[in-house]
Every structure is written in C-alpha cells, then in structure tokens.
Length: 187
Image 1: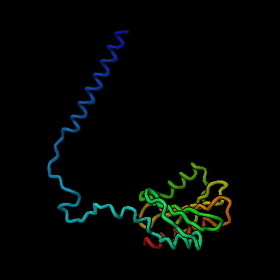
Image 2: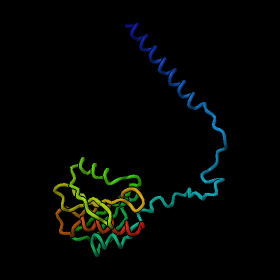
Image 3: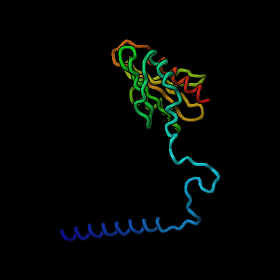
Image 4: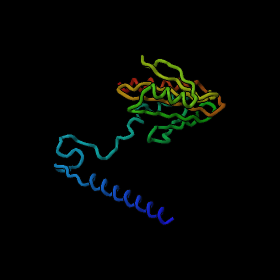
C-alpha cells in the first residue's frame, strides 16, 4: 500500500514540476516594443466608451416594430445584449414579443442545421432578393422566425411571438417585414 502512495506522490510531483516549467517558459518571453493605450500613436480614434455596442438594436424604430407586428401596440425595449428584445403592449389578443438576432459571423446553412437539430420546421423563402429561412416550432402557430444573410456579412433574424391561442396576424409575415426593413436600412 505504501508503495502505491509513493508512486502516486511521485507522479503528482512530476506533474506539478512539468506545469511549473511550462508556465515559466510561456511567461518568460520578452516582447520588444512599447505598450500603448488602444488607438494611441496610430492616428485612429478608438471609442473606448463602448457607447455604440448595441446600435444594432436601433436598426428598426419602435414605430416600425409596432407597424409590422401589431398596429396600435406600444413596443418597449425589454432587453439589449446578445439579442435585442421588445415587448408589445396592446397587441391583438394580448401582448407580443419580438426578438432580433444578428450574428456577425453566422451563415444561413448553420441556422438551417440548428433548426433541424431542434426539430423546427424551416422553409426557404426570399427576402429583398436573397435566400432566407422561415422557421416555425412544431405545433406553434403563434410564433415564427425569419433569418436572412445580412447586407454585409453574417445573419440577421427576427422572431415574433404572440400570446399562445390569441387571435393575431401571421407571425411569419411580421418577422419577414422586419427583416425586409433591416436589410433595406443596412444597405
């Protein structure tokens, strides 16, 4: 039994020494030059206030969201972060929710693959002359998403969710209209 403890202790010691040696080698490099703050000395004016990070959430106006999803409703920004979300008060049959996603390095084929893995129903459609995907969850007539290639690169998409079972317009038509507005504004 003591022989096993000694072997284990030896292995742990060797692993610890190897880790220390690897760390010292990686941290022991000297890089020539001088450190400068972002944008210093380049002539470029770098915005370090990060005040425009969520500008994509303003690609469509609140009035445009209301017009596309539920005329007479009142959209309110509910979340800005990895996605942009709006809650619509006064939509037909109750409240609604709109979500914008914009993946700068995304691709429609990846969206289609993900939709298939989730068991969603996806159809190819055309928006502003380009291929797009219309996506529905099975047995959910109250929500729909439309995704298209962004004007420059990546993928944009809107999901429209009405309250389940409510009387409302076609969520796919609303999502498609929002994507059309986004592609038109992004040109």
